[in-house]
Image 1 (tube, rainbow over the protein chains, first blue to last red):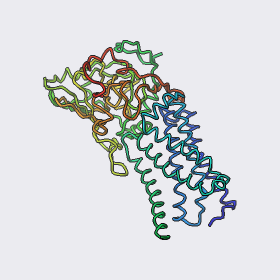
Image 2 (cartoon, each protein chain N blue to C red):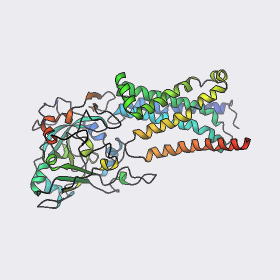
Image 3 (spheres, chains in turn yellow, orange):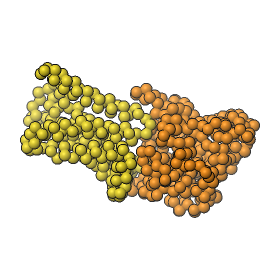
Image 4 (tube, each protein chain N blue to C red):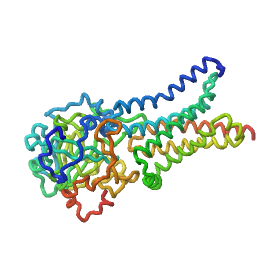
Length: 202
Length: 278
């Protein structure tokens, strides 16, 4: 196992942070320089949501990776990727409220009630907030057993995220199928080990 | 402030106070699934798609003069003029576009429909070599059932607002905007304005539009712009008017009934329940 306190690992983690800021940096640059096509606000909205989903999926990929490729402390990236997921998700929601609804909370309410895919997306992002807030070592110690229970919520949340993503897509299901398959593999692996361990201890 | 000549006729009667959308956004924000489902990509991908005056259109069905005509033939029938129209996409964005084109009515008059001709069915070119978006995706699925098909009633088709466009901003239509010949029906959602037309069929049967075929509860035959009838997944009460490509070049404005062309077209739908016939 690569030691997590080594300089090498710290550099890798630093580079990972830079990569995670990449989409944000690019969007900021591109928006300021009219590089986002005809409807930049919409493009930023969609890209932020897309990256939120990708980082959540990546975060959930770390545990299975641990079993597939040993010797790398994959789990050390899990919290970081999850937090970037929440960060992009919250920016996505902020863009929606600021530019699409233009701070009209009456409109927000109508959207929530009448457009189920918006409701589903909102639930997912709001659900991420307590997870992000309690992602510190301190919270982990303080909450004890309940911390695991609380963070188990990431599974229903990722299902909501994928539902929102697929629901808003118009006709082309090729993209959504890629991410849906990814999620199914991730959840499938966990279900598999859950039942395997259950039988083992039975 | 209008760079290309104002409309030769102000058909909407409202003086078109709307600011013209920039040439860049009109030619770089395109729903043309034949190229890609991205709105940015068609401009890039259509670079080599430059059909000329030898483009063929099969005009068939319930008419006295069926045949395959070249664009050159067709252009002799109508008077090309500039028309500035609002353009409202069903997705909720809109632009103001200076088209050049001629009235579809010019074609109708030339080919002489008989009494059985109640509808016109249009088709876009099907050629996956030209349009990679017509190929199957990774999971073997088509993004839409091809070829793209649209339809109008003959009354809608013969309406003086209905245009066959051959250009935008005073230039020939770029590939991504539906070169060399496309329909423009300004009071309907943009997907009705079919691009790169290779066939016009006059028929007594109501055509099934591609989007209606794909998602019948979301996209209907009429697809008239209507702020009171929401899309099942989003509101149609407002629209995001795209003026230019800058970050704040988009403005949220209320959507108008029939996209602001009520005075001209509302009579076509008298007695029709627009909620049912969406």
